Length: 441
Image 1 (cartoon, rainbow, N blue to C red):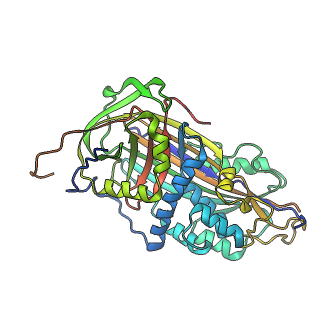
Image 2 (cartoon, one colour):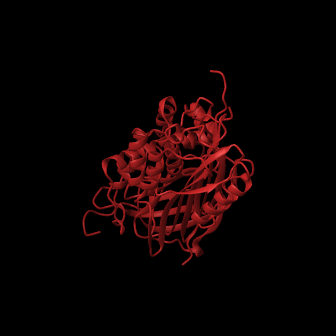
Image 3 (cartoon, rainbow, N blue to C red):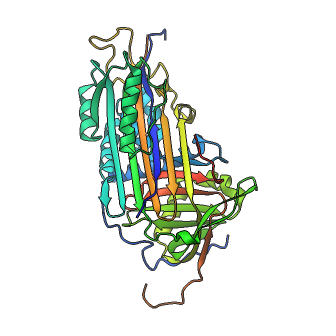
């Protein structure tokens, strides 16, 4: 059985050296049973990792609002962004660390946060019949330039990140090829060119990369014979046609305050696709604005307590790609120091270093490159994500009550969606779908 692609990639590029300068009806089904099957591959999280899940989900909402216009299709992996930036955060000190902590919503200081991230990442790898999830990390470092010993040890122990030596000064293009080749392999070919030409330069000194990949069949696949070309209404009211899949099944779903939500499990029950669908096509931006971390937690908690009910489901086939540099977004969100000549990543590396240029006094982040793709059809989904942080020099049921009537969930209008790990609660990917056939570049 073919499984479909859902992918995302994030690259934090580049950590460069810093130059020397002068100074509604509200009907919900009863919680009589679990909303989905118990996950086959179970995990447990310590309290720190659970706190990181909650903060990462909150950051997901921040990034969803900041990353692109509200009337644009979007697919991102804030979990990958958080992980990769977390590597740089581990090496940050002072105001640089403080701003990153606030904007990324990290719950702990740099060292404790990386330990929590390591515990969370350990849950994000499994392979079983009909589904796979994996995450991987890698670091490329300027040949001859040393990391601080404790930083390098933590990257090995908690991030499981292998360190490769390259010569950014002499051949930045070859370094770019090495990173892109690794990301392509880690995402099973979904993201072949995370770093475009010119992102890595002769001033780059390190690239920190995270990749996440998910591929699974639906627990309840759609019938291809039931898929039809039908109207889809965009936020502005314009109507176009797209392929809508149709399904009659039992899903956890309910409606509240003019918004319907449904959870579609993948095989094994470890991961599910959650879809938030406002009643009106133009209501998605308002709902997105109202979705605070507290509100999101309530929606998901109520969904977990909602028993599956007979549902008439309509969902479009999806195929999206999104690629962007998030450096300006994170700067606007409140972390400008990390991207400036005032950045302090001295817990990562001390510059100048023996054999290096004495004019190179520190590191800063120059880019945060993110790419994500998603493809969903009748069989299932596949997802992958990668994040590279490039560091550059600074030059100077049983019988009971009568069943509820079928719940009708018709996603022929804009909606938000999230790929959710049901075992930990982590949102692996989030996105919005506002119009058909809008492949993001």
